[in-house]
Amino acid sequence: MGHHPPPRADGKLPTTLTFLEMLAPPARPAAAERPAPNAELRLVRPPDLALNRYLYDAVGRTWLWYERKLKPDEEVLAYLADPKVEMWALYEGDTVAGYAELDSRQWPDVELAYFGLLPVSIGKGYGPWMLDRLADMVWARGPKRYWVYTNLLDHPKALDRYVRSGFTIYKRMDTLYDDPRVLWPDEYPPDAQPRIA
Image 1 (cartoon, rainbow, N blue to C red):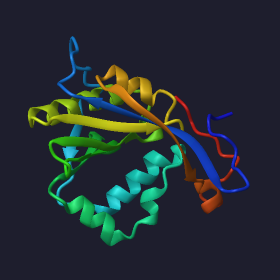
Image 2 (image 1 turned 180 degrees about the horizontal axis):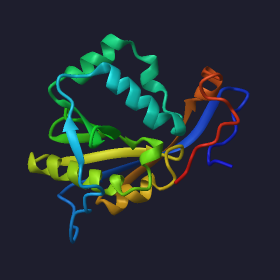
Image 3 (image 1 turned 45 degrees about the vertical axis):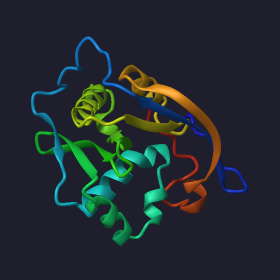
């Protein structure tokens, strides 16, 4: 069985949000090694709405991401086109493996707004390497704070991976989401279980 609770009659999905931050470049003996010789992060410019929509769903469906699906194309494209927002796609050669979004609209704070890998790319070492590259890029710009949040619906190793990459927990909060398995039962069947690697 997966780690998501079964759908509730009221259509609500309880979870706990965990907020993490870095206030200085991470102290680490060495950055994670490149997981594949042809692995690279590419800045997606100009904004690519179709690629963003695809990666949001391909990365997040297993973990019940849905909120961006409710936003109209014009709103998502305006967000991606903001010069203070960056979408980075992870490629192995010509194959996309994951992505991240950095949001600097509240500078000098920078949020790792989205981060994740396609299910077929989990467990191959991309996560640590990608997080290290992103942290190096962010801290080279001289922010005051770099932060992220995760929740209990995400990959079970997500929180530990963020901590191991240099983030520290500063707040936890219980909340309720609308359950996408109730909103869109055809897309998120209740008996579908997350693939955990």
